[in-house]
Image: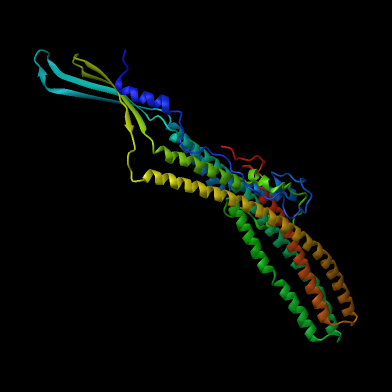
Length: 475
């Protein structure tokens, strides 16, 4: 039996071209990274859970806030929705590789206006039809397969961007919580300083009543107490700001109470991250991996553009069944089937298709540059966090010594003033120095804690949906 002529060309194309895939295959580029970080880690590495690093602060309230943020943050929720969309798009692109099949049906009825003379009744007739339609566009040159690759890479990118948001949100919660703790501790420090200065004011008033001090000393002591009291307002405003920010991060309006959340003291961190080497950021940082996934997507898009240069085969078909004369006994049946083939061959488009390929190649080059820049930024963030941690620890150590010396100076100045051996300005200066030094020490200790949070975030510690440590970067 001779083959049907109109099936010969499609069959030949299917046999010779369906295994071809246009466009470049993605290969991960080799990126240069420093051999090591310039600044050594100023903490004992590996003592804290890398995936739940915030637990190193030993603060249950902070742990609860991070868990709430990872579960309820609206930016993370939006990222999950974008990931869901991307995964659905993968299914849509993959479905385009398969044939399509649709069904249709219809029915109708007619009633005669006059009676049939031979049959004393009205004439009623009807008709019905049903059919199937078939369509398939074989992926002869792999353009659709490249589209599937691009969609899969985009889904990976969005999953990694979701993970990166978790990384950032966890660190932001810790930073805001530390701000809240610092302001609460500063408020307690101001209260303690006011008590000390009130004692000094009482001493000055007693000396003034005894004629041993001038009214100027009393005014100066009263001014110092009032000046210290004035520090409370900005601190309370700072606590309100940090509390509001925590509410946004946890995804709720006015769900965080400063009075209940603020710790009594600044939490201290136990342990430190195992930061590894700069090259480890290629796998550790979700934003770096997302940039690589975008490069893979852009590479696959080149193949999609190149496929437009080649012929496109379509295979439509139909199968229909119809009946007529229902109700009269005169049923006419017909079955009709069709199968066709069409070939769309690009001949001339003024260079539009070639321009699309060039544009796709340029986008891939841009994605490669962004990938390199993202890695460079990640290395710089780790370097900055390491340097900031070392500087903050050194400053805190110096300020601890300064605070101890200032406490001794205040005690000595008050004793000497009570004996009339020094003027009141010496007492005022000693008390101001003590308050400023204690506040500077508190700020430095906060900087140490924030630098630890920055370092964990920069190193790319994995954070799961609920903070249990399992990364969700898979598609």
